[in-house]
Image (cartoon, rainbow, N blue to C red; front, side):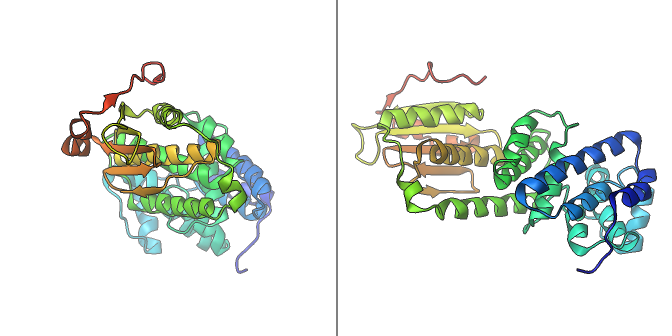
Length: 327
């Protein structure tokens, strides 16, 4: 493969002057996490080392210096004023990695995608992205769970990490970047394909839950992911299509997606139970049909519009007080 191969000592000496002490400690943490993940998942440790050591090498530059690099390398600034400082360094660092450091294209790509992801992330891309997100110095809510998952299921960890970032952006009143949304969509598509390619033995090892048990397990999962206004209706007397309706609200489109994904994932993992069908993925209303239990995940405005509680007003409300624990 074209490009220069660097020893760690040589590369550290070359890039260390470009980092502040704090940023350098973060970078060394990324490198160590990346090498651990590379060993776990059979990735090229040499390329992981190179990418993690240079990924933030332009992070401490001024906006003017960043713009000069953009001009030099023909980088089109696609970011608003608030995004620029946090995001442009991935592209300028990748440009320097290719030009000044003559690094291999795969390494350059991993550097370029370490903040936002991309629509076709390689194993190297994912490891560098996650290393940046979960190195030992990171201490945001949920990071321990992502760290653990990164050594168990890399794509699940990517899904959790990207989803967490997108939810944070939306909670702060921002708009998720299209590159990250595409990355999450592709990761979720890959996970869906993986799960649907499970062999028949695994798919048939389902736990035999009663409709009531199934409903309660779904409610517990949704509650653990902070679903809002959780309700369950017993509708056996009103329809032959289901025994229970479960209704909940997500605080954002990202949270809605996370709720639906978590219910589907945990029901498969814990009980071997798959939805009969899923509707409305990536919309403001997602439905998971478990035959005896139909799960509805809404955005608030859609829940008000469709008003299922009123339409199924003859259904018997289920007391969930002994189940719900989330604030």
